[in-house]
Image 1 (cartoon, rainbow, N blue to C red):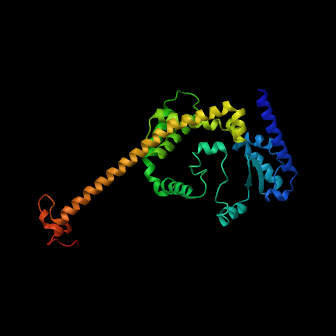
Image 2: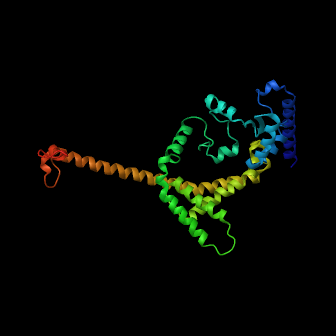
Image 3: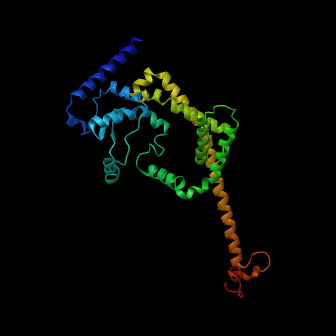
Length: 308
């Protein structure tokens, strides 16, 4: 116990010394960042890591009113710049898009949850991000796909109506039923097939537990080498939730990949049969009446009348 206490005190002293140096350093050494509230690198980071996105919005409004359209907040180990002006946002993301196209290194928890940045919200600018963006814009958000999901929407609407009708009289909490119906639609769009109610409930449960635990797990982003020693139980809880999500989602992903490969294989076999059939017709060896006509029979025959 004395050894752990000594290690913790030594790390705390080192962090305080680093914080003091950062506070006493001139503004020019801070990479010309926009203004923001005074931040103590150790305590400030811990306080912000306990905030959720809903808590951050009112804080940002007051900071923008005080410091201007660009504000710097030290959240985690990297500073974050928030822009409230549409003009400045357009200049940064459009006129200088190549400069700001990439993302900063993710926090440790985010890197784990996104399988090392393999989703569109966290992937760095490059081939993976372009592939995910093309898949999202062309396969899901494109207007031509609205009709393709019409049956899915009808199925989800039927689920919603059935759930509402099954409720007893009195006050009905409709938000839960709407959330479940929308979740059914998203699961169908993700896996390309209608899943059983039990499977949908399992996916909803693991996702909900991770989202609700986000605030508790945010503190693990701060100095992971230290928190893995001090907050071992919380790290264990997080990994259990993460592994539970893998146990639910990975079999569904593999089943979808297998079905896709089988579908492509059947389509290839069907095309090969049609090609062989065409070869036989062209060569004049197709079975059945009139097969000996060869190319002329395949193209309409010698005495075929032109279309009017």
